[in-house]
Length: 149
Image (cartoon, rainbow, N blue to C red; front, side):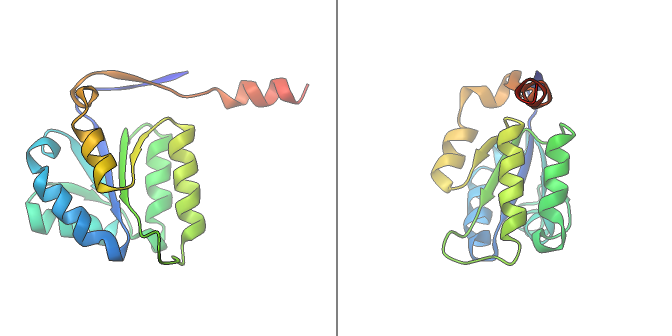
């Protein structure tokens, strides 16, 4: 079962509080390439990116207020192809279960995920960024049915 990504990618931009500045710097460095794609992000992060860079970023709620779940739903609906998530590995977040669920959904739907500057750099500079690409989404419904019979 596949989901086709177009030449223009739908990219989610997310950052925990202690990583927002790093994401803002990364977006500023990559503004030209990112301007070719459709951007969205969680609450404060999306607002800061728009204010700092002028890029149009569709804003969802903040992560702890359901934004992570909204991003997850957008992934399920095929509205996100790539997720750039600068998370804080040293600070426990009140919405850690939501973050884990978001990462699970991203893997389940074969969304490209970058969680650091270096992985985001490699992902954005890939030749695949401007090509049509078929994601390989495993048909878990059939797999579950086979395992239960």
